[in-house]
Image (cartoon, rainbow, N blue to C red; front, side, top):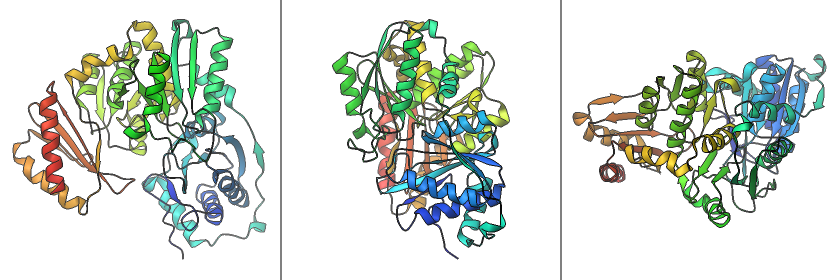
Length: 456
């Protein structure tokens, strides 16, 4: 029996060739069909050069399992979430490697109602079936049908349901699609704005979908991937910059000065906006950086609820609590009315409306919060012995901590600062986040101290 190393904690990702190829994609499709026994599912794929062939192999596996396949073509992950829920089908799969290197690809899987299929909710079962590769003969089943469809109009309708276009005043926005799957959706949104006579000007950067990624793999979480958006904002004197990763399930915002705004502060902005329209609602946040979000939600009359980091955990907690919104500092934003799933398109539309209704710039909207709760941003370290290094930090600080939480890695709170330290679920790195109560110098001092302990 083969061991398929492309199966990860939350999804499927692997190096093209040995780890992920058309044969393995067929087996995954066949296994998905046998495990879930769906009548029909939707398929989509990002712009990577390998995505179409992997998607078609996946489709053949599904059809051989008797599943009807609805192919929405080149798409972002959230389009699969939307299509699965909108069409009320039994599941969906997006072929994507998001921000992984060029020689990788992968898949994100959901069941009915766009519920994620991850390690503890079926992915390991699908893995075992695919590894065993002992399926019923294809001729013993009625083969499923294959159909290409488009839901872009319905998807755009849904996106526009989050804003009141009458609130939009003249703005100039830079949008960097990173040569990924976002480009066609931005064009469709622009066309809808034009139909409705909404006075927005969109300046498009790296807009054309191109699986060779001539301007590098889009991952604006990395500082080295931000300059093109930042420079365009400054050059065009734009009101805001927006940048996406390859499958646009994350969106990253830049203020009118071209400065990158940490996702942490955008979570606070959106939480406040939702609470204004929906008083008393529940808001989900992750434990990495939390004080700003807790402060905003509490003062806004809402209930802040902490969840373990990761889309599967956040979505599950969102459903349990019927939370209206959830946000992670990594720029994943989740919405109750979007099947509790994450979207990269909804956040920038909401913030655009907020700029117009508040009469403030983005820097003005976040400057007080950034001063009140200065944060390190996520610092990633590749360590030879991550468990030992984390334990060293724990032993040093535990006797002094006012509160210790193990929801995700270790979180320790002190009188005027806190930190979260955790091993990544998706990469061989340790992730550190530090924040303080209005004391940037203290935050930097404690960050340096922890980094020194980790490196020792």
